[in-house]
Length: 154
Image (cartoon, rainbow, N blue to C red; front, side, top):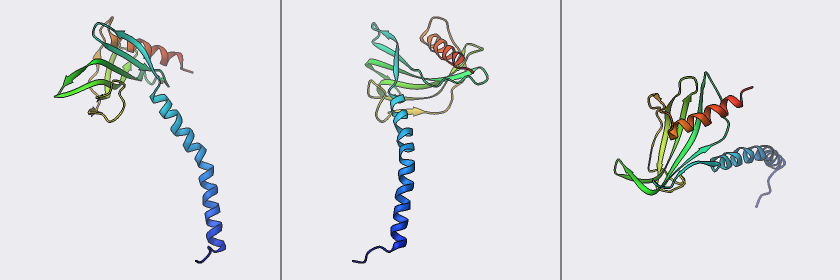
């Protein structure tokens, strides 16, 4: 078997060094994404209806009076819509902090109770803006998202 020449060995050494330079960066990028995806905070537990409502407290930015937040709702008993049975829904919601309004930017339905695994159905186009009624889960979502976004402004 022919041994690699000087140029081939030099190339392999340089390639190895370049990979080792970016490996920690790649590792740093993937670990926080995974950790953040698991960082759900229970906001409300409706024991009568067997529903739980979670928010993800991370990186709130206020841009032109609007911010976004991930929310997850889980169900003790499977819900049915469009002939699909699901036990959780994960949504990205945009809030208008100046006008007490919200719209769903996208959502996904899951068979699992913790919104993990492959989604049963998803939609990624924004819905229309709607006003938020007082004393509802959506009003709580709005309050948390807008308060956090305003608190983190420079």
